[in-house]
Image 1 (cartoon, rainbow, N blue to C red):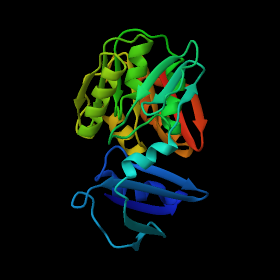
Image 2: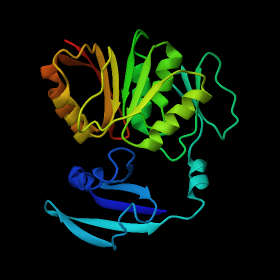
Image 3: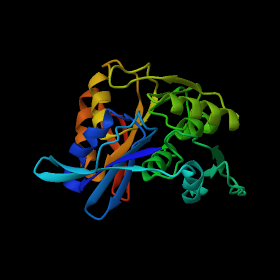
Length: 271
């Protein structure tokens, strides 16, 4: 397995990230170390370019590009960093490999992302779940970029129906279906490239994506969208205002903003 990483200063992170989006429209790992941001993608040799370690110019900065081989047992070792967690006192996320008693009164979601992105441990996912608890479950729910199915499964367990999830990554589609089955919920899951068009929407829409994809989503939103509430995340704090402005012409205004570890989640409602 190969890990391709780009490291740069935070002010140039967006430009560096653009270099990786074509390789992995979803599922990019992000690590922050002070003013330095690192983005990485994983894949077998031949699918991820094995570029030599080098530095390239992005804007007025030098960006470090590095490829490394990942140990054969990486798929097991990464589990050591993901543990059960309680969100908002009402949603209990438990990795399938942990035998932990659920919190009394909390909705339990058991997850195994397989090779897909998303264990629920990233701040953007936690922010989305926190904002999900703001809403009264009713009607259809759509998750754009469903990853391993965390948000879609939570919505289904809380009472939304029907629930649909979309992701570009076929491994994410497989993981969401498997996790939905393990959690005894019904979710329709399809592969979709959100850069080329949006699927049918619903009164409640979630999109935990990166800034460039969220801007693409806003541009493709139909004027007669029928969406009453939309939750957006995958954003650095400094990117949030631009996304609020992008969705304003569609009739949305900011209802709530939450932040954790430099990441922001937004809940927009019809004005």
